[in-house]
Image 1 (cartoon, rainbow, N blue to C red):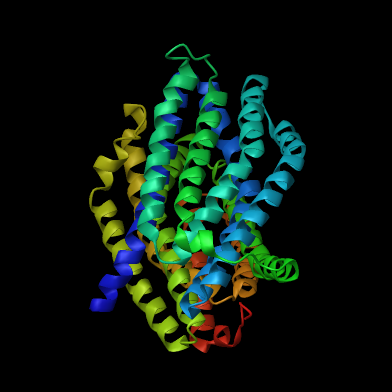
Image 2 (cartoon, helix red, strand yellow; image 1 turned 180 degrees about the vertical axis):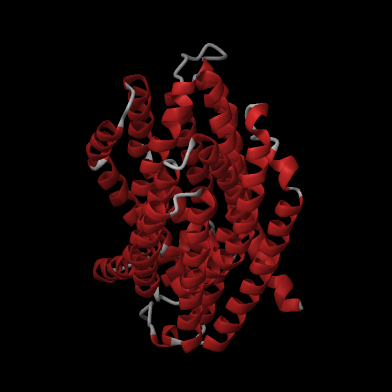
Length: 444
């Protein structure tokens, strides 16, 4: 029981941080809804594309935290610090790469656009986020340093403060309050980038403790070698993030062809699903950190035990939340219910989707946490290839077949249950077989 409490102490700030980010996104969209419908429509495609591009580099930078954790577990403070600096170097290069790729993103949005008014807002929103991506990468490098050392509460409180800055700036920049120019959707993007810079500055300042100030500078060759190793393990992790989002985007696109009411119900349920599953990303990061620290100590048994304890805590929590969502399905859906003429249809389909959501969330939580543990052990290539096989080899072909043969929202959502069960089963088998025990991430 003592170890479970220690794990919760590490994990709860990470889980709450994910919820905090979800709330911030919700507030952003609420403000944009009061700016104009065009701004609200533009925010989703532009932010999804930005998240796909930024998410790749962000995941690569974040993997520096695994190196921090392994060296921290080994008691090598100098190399732990060097891993942080390597993360900063990767973040700066990633910022340049993200800016270089910005025109390709604009071309993609233009190719998919349907209304000129919406497109102009999409381009403005995406452009600011893309050029501001360096703030995300620098913030991630600093946050990963603290997370790798197990100091998750510092990251959480800085995250809360930064998101409060974002929420405070949103109405000022979007609507032109306090003498500021009315920037509309561009104001929301500027607020996000500025708040992220604030988070990075605070975390970077906190990282300049006595230990950091006195740490010896690395040799150039050793530093370059460390960067190369982070990229070796981090690039598959970044590719996983992009392709995972892409597969889900394709699924959402297919569900949009079922019908307006069904699609509205599906989007409402996905909104609830995101709030419930977001904490599991925190549990996954916690599992990754615990496994990496144990592997750094050379204690694979402790790594296995901590991963299983984190899994039990995460799955237990999501099971409780999912059952509560089903029990209070109707009042939750009433927040999204449209015209009274279709309200009963909305509730009926919504209940069915909530049941399916509860079924997949348990397996999804298990898959996410075990994947995090595998990443912490360095098994990032398996995580990538297994997701590719399950998503693009099984799930999306199954979605396509269902869309042709029995195009209903219930049938489409049922394919998600199949997908997450397969992902979960394969990840658990991989973990149990222990191939990760033979992987060497760090070098002395």
